[in-house]
Image 1 (cartoon, rainbow, N blue to C red):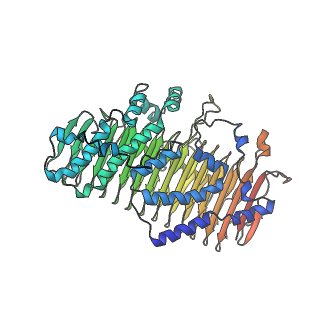
Image 2: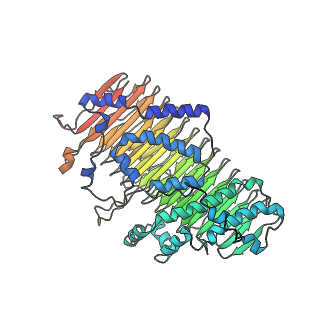
Image 3: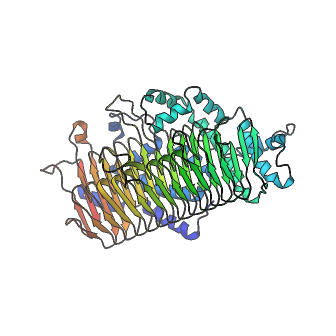
Length: 631
């Protein structure tokens, strides 16, 4: 667990105070006789549009009050700083964000049933029954293997029973084809399954398994390993104990458990566990390779109707997957935890912290890491799902492919629809059959380092359709590069948020709806807490509101440069005049605190307040609110 220093605690206190101070916003809105308390969506009006099946409370909280976002940005950053290596707590937190609040370790030891059986019952021991690792020096290994196996051997355990119930209704391969091949033929069945599936029990059971794996990983440095790789065939799957040297793990079916003591190892497999819906890897050290190149099955760290966990404690590691890998959960839980090293992650889709009807977590504690994906990755949450990507420290590079057009966006065929880097997304069907699904929660949090972010459309703290997307960056001189719907933006009843806590940062968005802009009952919010920052912004940006959206931009301090292209930017808004929309607000709010700033627009100046011009030629519409202020 990472401990905060005294300086870090002081910094957090300052950040918290800044998060609660909206006097600058009130000053800007006072020009029109308004306050921050009036910047929100009328939830009774929103109910008339419908389409929010599975709407989360987390979304509703921010949709009702967007100015809660800075406080929760700070709280989340603190939580992730504390828990970056605690997979049990991260899993509990992620499940709660999509309304499955289970804290198995809240009162007492959640594994007491397996660690302290009644005196009259001997403690179960799979290693004893198999007569392996019997030397006393392997006692710690035996203890941890036996503990995990006691959980998976329990026929009454929440996890296996919940998964077995789902397997009676649909096959894993059918689910794989539905998500990866984007088949819509089973929409009705998926909706039925998701409505009936007991996610609470799934996450309760998964927390027990995660805790057993965590305890094993925490003690691995003190364990002795055999000179030769050891395999145990069990009723729940294959258990493999590696050596302290190089081992090759090449399997046609993922083992139940692999424990490795070090060396530059290679893991090569894809697919589904055969007997029990769990595949776990714990590797102590070494420059390891995790390779899953089969495009027809999930990869390492990807779970579909089950659970997959990878814990790598040290080394410069290489992860290569295609889809459903590297911390992805679909009707299940996928976790990838890497402690130290300069690591490389490569995947196409559903990876690197992706949850769709499940939880996907990827956490990297330290090192200068490189992450590449195409779509649906790097902190992506689909319906009833939470995707979480955390990196504690290092100069990291996050890329969602946009140089080669692989998944052309409907907004611009020259660029990819990325859906990556802190994105929440739902299924909109109000113009099809009415069976819309509210989106989930997608968060990317990078706590320390000079970082680089690059993507196409729908990325970097963006959300769509009753979803929440967040990108939180705790500090460093960062570079954000995107095209459209990026950097604290979103569309259609959503909450997109980017919070950068410090550093001299650069924001570059090429086409539209970016850098704190909201469209169609969406809040798009960019909160930049300090540093000399540079913004290159398109139309609909920098506190731009459109079609009853809320766009909020707040740069707290620093000497900043704003290069814009005109249009709805720097605290401007476009009203909608269709039915009830005519009487509902649209807000464009631009706020710049201390510092000497440079603007390319004539109306924006240092130490000035302004009111954006109305789209109505007579300028009388009271529901169109565009304001700016530079203190």
